[in-house]
Image (cartoon, rainbow, N blue to C red; front, side, top):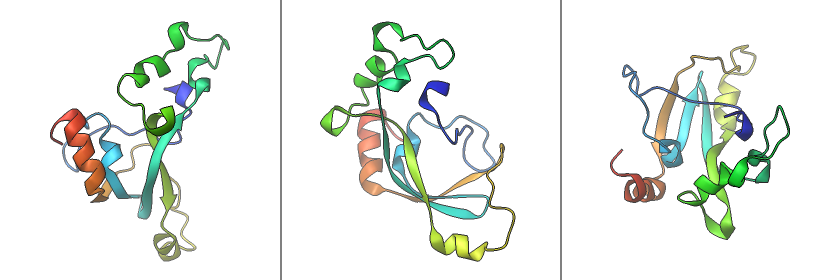
Length: 131
């Protein structure tokens, strides 16, 4: 996971359900809430050749992994390999929390899915089955 340099890593299930999330389900999200702040789920995150380099040893991975595997089912437009999503904080929800020190994301915070992107959801169901 370190090779992807994520800011947030999610696990778990729906509220009250500790089962695993389906793989790649974050692709379908349009708006989420973390710790009272809403985020627009803007776009998929394209991954570059840096993911093939071990951050500790600086050695390249054999056979170009993990990009080689991502190429088999996550290749998007223009040959980009997608893994993860870009989030943008909703200014309206930030204004509501102005002056509140709770604008920090902590391990264990709950993510609420506020809205799904119907086009992405349809694409996801075609690729991976039902959500």
